[in-house]
Length: 467
Ligand code: FAD
Ligand code: NAI
Image 1: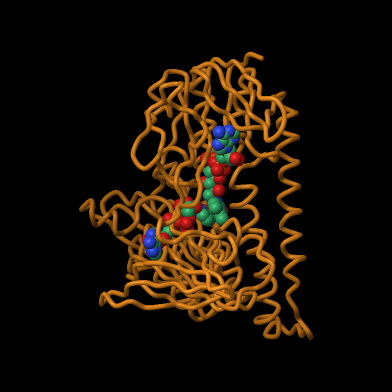
Image 2: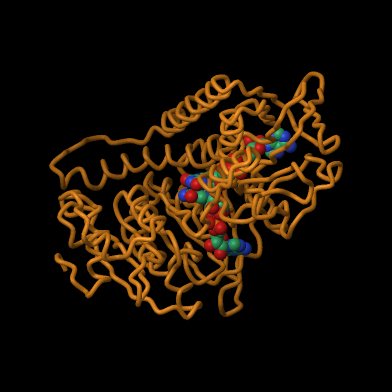
């Protein structure tokens, strides 16, 4: 077979790129090594983690807040097997959805490992059966990422696990030790803490979610400690972990240089992810790599080999599904002769804990580093009528605006339904709104979105109404 474009990898980068290519009239193939489409995000990432976050949140609320609402329950129990089965059903229904979209857009799907024979020929080797070769004019590499592991801390997938195993445990851990206080550690830690596990986070730096605006990590740390009993150990350098049969022992060096030991029954290693290119045989096409295992690309996401592009987790930038999707669309449109553009500064980052956390644009730390004159406006959810009604009063919205022009430069939020609220900030910043613009727009009452308006009012002449 001969294609205009062949996509390798069916995650959010790859399948979205394939659809956009097909929409633009290109004869398109997609190669996926596994038998299901959707990549990390759908199978072992975004979707299953959110399914478990939702289930565990229901349990936590039933156990801890229903009574206050006047709802009394007896014999409340966790059925973990059912929770995991429901999650699997959610994943399956999305797998089917992507298969349908491939058919609808007349995209040929090949299951098997894709590897370059040369720049225009790709060999597909299925798990069983004959390998075949397909010819292609152009290629989009969207092979994603895998968890980073430490050489002195081998993951045995039984007691010392990554997010993939944590999404299908057979029991609720008594004590889970989490190495890395980033997004995965806090989301999956929240799942199990809500179901009754004790959670200990051992973090190398001095804060959780350290790349986000520092005010967010500080507030999230306070709330996770208060509501779920999280324990945090900062500036601890993990030195090893052993499976003792019944549990795990994790050793670390504390800030004083002393060795400390943490004992639990599971250890989740969540210290970041690394680009995945194993088996691609990139040398055969002459594709060059960048630092830390990434594929090197230019502003159009084209590699050093004309006609071969790379997108998503396998290239530089945030390892996020929506970033990968935007890149997939960009490459397809660029191939079709259009002039697409991505504003990387406006890709929002979200953490699906409760309260949820999100940020877009520059952090306060970045503005300080740039020496830019800025002003801030904040609004706490404890002053929001809507948040009082739902008993979700932790958190705040913080707006950073240019001191002279009032243009919004960054918005950082922690609180209820923030994952959805951040979209307003993205829209405002895409259109280069000023804080005054948002402050003057009507926001329905009572909603959590009023906190954004109030924070903008606070940023413009300190005129928030409700604080
Ligand atoms: P991937 O989704 O990793 O897909 C790559 C695909 O390529 C895989 O299916 C792989 O099997 C296939 N492949 C690799 N090599 C070959 C080959 N040689 N031949 C054929 N196929 C190949 N991001 C968010 O934005 N929001 C979230 O809520 C979120 N939650 C997450 C939760 C967890 C637990 C994890 C681990 C990640 C989460 N992410 C989230 C990150 C998100 O999953 C990734 O950023 C996203 O999946 C990257 O998309 P991609 O298309 O680049 O690669
Ligand atoms: P992460 O980069 O978010 O966090 C890793 C944390 O581990 C950091 O705080 C880092 O300082 C710490 N760390 C690194 N090495 C360490 C060590 N040796 N000892 C102790 N701590 C150490 O990575 P994470 O949580 O593994 O997630 C991987 C990627 O998946 C993220 O980059 C994120 O983009 C994506 N993801 C996104 C989600 C979302 O959008 N909601 C959810 C889950 C994952």
